[in-house]
Amino acid sequence: MAVPPIQRSPQQAGRRLPWLLDILLGLLVVASLPLAIVAIPNTLSVVAKLLPSDLGQAGLMRTHGLALPALMLTVPLAAAALRRVRAVHLLVGGLALVALSDAAGGYAGSELLVGVVRVLRGVGAGLVIPATLVAVWDRAPVLRALWVGMFSLSLLAAQALALWPLDDVSSWRVTLQPYPLVTGVALGLAAIYLVAWMLLGRPGTPEPDERERSRLLLAAVPAAGIAVVAISTATEGWGSTLVIVLAGLAIVSLLALASIGMAESRTPAYTMVAVGVVLLPSAAQVTLVEMGGLGGPGLRGLWVPYGVAGLLAIAASVAVRLFARAAGRWLAPLGLLAMVVGLCSVRLVVPAADGLVLVVPFSLLAVGAAVALTAALQEVGVGTAGFGLSLCFAGVLTGFLLGAGVQMAMLDGVRSAQELVDSFVGALHWWALVGGFLTVAIIVLAAVMARRSGKGPAAAEREDVPCAGPDVLLVPAADEDEEEGPTGAIPRVVLPVVSAKGAFAAGSDDRSPGVPPQGPSPEDVASA
Image (cartoon, rainbow, N blue to C red):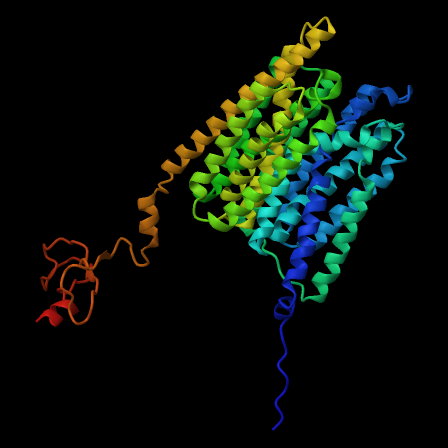
């Protein structure tokens, strides 16, 4: 009798070469995450002298800043769409939009076209970031750590990466297409990954459940409000006090939104808000202060600190992911405290004529963010991670608003170039102080909410008992030093205390079922 051959499922076929997909995915993360986040900074003012006279400079700067609101609104919607769309398809589509914005940027000649190009780039970046996170979620543990490390490095170096292509340029349109070669490489890697994914069995990726999808859609509401405030601030010319107040209200709304839902989802949400508000806005101001025109080492003197900070962030993320999976409750606030120390060091060493000194604040900021994010994402689902990511980018725009308000207050009434430089540095120092206190407040809020939720060690131990409930109690077995019966230590099942009045009477009117007397325990029989 002939035996038919065994047919392997596509999932089994996809496990033949898992290392190939992991390598391609790792390369995609390294290439695409910085490319996506570099869309955030608005660098048009650096090439303002190259703008044609028939184009309004103020209008172009406003439209050039539309990339971050577009990215911020796309991230929660893209994370929710991953319930129905494969992550690899979303990743290829996002990189295709980034490539399209690069191509169209060379032909932008009006305020409208600049706005369209920047919105396209923001939408593409908003698709790439959650798609890469979901793609690495259930792969090798090192890949998720690599994603977090590259994410922290990208936020740290985004301003410098956006300014680097503008050195000695002859066209202002370079701001719309800063890295076309890197875009092509990332898109080619995504196409290769798509083909390999199809040939190796189309391995699945996790998706948010219905409750997480609702929270993701809810995260788009404050993001839209913050985007309206940011655009109005650039358009209406509001004063510094109003901008600071609105930014503070935006932070409160983000923290309120982070407080809803399950208790285990609050830590990553709070952590993402803190990292978003503090990391990129702080690093951007430090980068601008350290430019050569202000007495700093310039971009060429900053790449070593950025590189050291990035390597340390990736190494710290890998170490936490592999060796400290159960320590997320205390590693997340510890990472945020490292960021606070980094902000304190900014007040001490910035401005610095020697760029190597900046290894200290950059490393503390990047490593602290990587440790906090890796620890916070250890034991949550992908939907919760997407929700926190949505709050992170809303926090980035809020941090820029708050930093802009502080700068406006410090630069008011400046009359000379030296006063301008001093006020600019003073604004950075004040922002570091505000960011540090804000981070500490978020750490305290997370601790208070965790205590109120009853997720302490005792509650966790009670949850681990499989049959503990209101109806039965499990009494632990005797200690090891006591004499053990032949049957071993068997836990007794103790019934709850009930009223004896009429409980066993034959004519009782009580409709509750009778409780039989407790039988002998197997230990009693064994001891007899």
